[in-house]
Image (cartoon, rainbow, N blue to C red; front, side, top):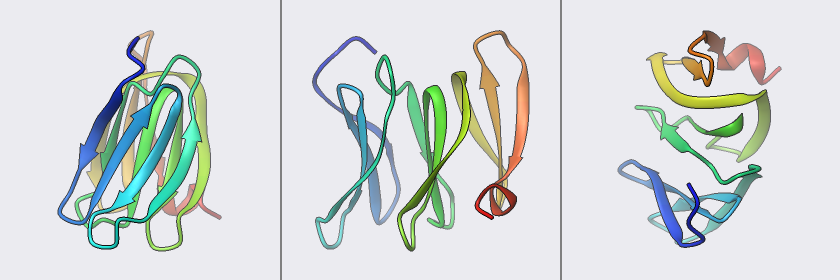
Length: 111
């Protein structure tokens, strides 16, 4: 993404993940509060919010997972990520620029 505009990366019933340039934030749609997630070199490529709104993942040059209840964020990859998908209630699969993939159990990553 080469734009410096405010970009909506993901949205669920109660949350939005947006980016502005290299910074990503989670916005609580009920309270309007904004929580910083990360800054990603070269702008975030995308994001996902899990189906139960327990975590969000922002990706691009790396990937960061943020637990939504307490907004604690952790880097889970420093490789270029082109997509992320939720594979079950606590796991995601990242696809990297070279086409390889890796599965992450987010409950393990948060320990």
